[in-house]
Amino acid sequence: MHVLVTGGAGFIGSHTVVSLLERGHRVTIADDFDNSSPKVLDRIEAITGIRPELAEVDLLDEAAFDAAFAAAKPDAVIHFAGLKAVGESAADPLRYYAHNLGSTFSLLRAMKRHDVSTLVFSSSATVYGDVQQPPYTEDGGRLDATNPYGMTKVMLERILRDIAGAESGWHIALLRYFNPIGAHESGLIGEDPSGIPNNLAPYILQVAVGRLPRLSVFGDDYPTADGTGERDYIHVVDLAEGHVAALEKLATTEGARAWNLGTGTPTSVLQMIAAFEEASGRPIPYSVGPRRAGDLPQSWADTGRAEAELGWKATRDIADMARDGWRWQEQNPRGFSD
Ligand code: UFG
Figure 1 (tube, rainbow, N blue to C red):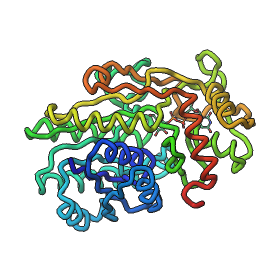
Figure 2: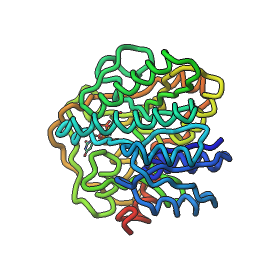
Figure 3: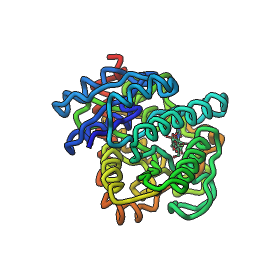
Figure 4: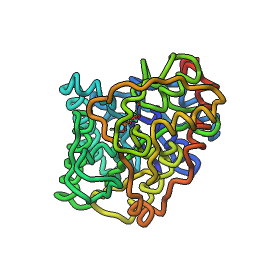
């Protein structure tokens, strides 16, 4: 199958492109490198021996995107492109709503014009808000979010369901990611945040490599085993393989359907620090600070639906995630700028 991957040069996108190529699919990346590096294409080629095709285009430039889509003639789309920083979204909601919704509308109109009806959409566990107690099940309650970034995912899930409900023939996967970390085992691709990382694993890695002096642990008075926040971290290669499984499942699934992509196992901030100290052989200095506004105590997936329906299950554990994340950071201390 020929798959157009929007945001295919990004962290999750690049790992998914590798999994698609390894599985024998043809890939065109659509990316404007706004928050990613063109070097990713060389690295994907080094890993797989295949250079993905590239459409360097901004989805918000609808005419240019439509022309690129028409030229590529894909059979299916995996849509990663979008803004994703929670704090930034709270500071500038208009930018987030306009960008994430507008770019998806541009994509959907191109798909309709060119008769492409298979779409895998990057959603997030953030759509569970604080409605359910974990483990979160796909149909366990209404969707909600505590910030505009998360709300764009809630809205886009609804929009995609409405479209698939109104028109027959759509095949849409809504993939709700838990906390993707780690890197490809080659150390050639990984997460390369711009500026100070917002998320725990890239922050820890930059402390380990000496780019940042110490980690602040956001609260140790949560009702959890050690008092720090617990999350369902998933190896990005497991996540990538989940996309391939979902894409292949869509051949026999009509409408829009949600699947959680997580491991089902929570890990605390202190356990993460210990895992990365072990993997890197370096101390991770930290101090305990106040809670971060909007953080939940705990989040983890019910993985039953993905296992039963996609035939997919995460196989890599926290030690694998820390080892592969560290290999990427050690080999590329300044990410793709090295
Ligand atoms: N944390 C720290 N110090 C830090 C960063 C994080 O203690 O410097 C803690 C947080 O309080 C939380 C845990 O580490 O307990 C994980 O935090 P992350 O920022 O790595 O991840 P979140 O679960 O907060 O957010 C992630 C994604 C969002 C997504 C959300 C829900 O970043 O995009 O999961 O799926 F919306």
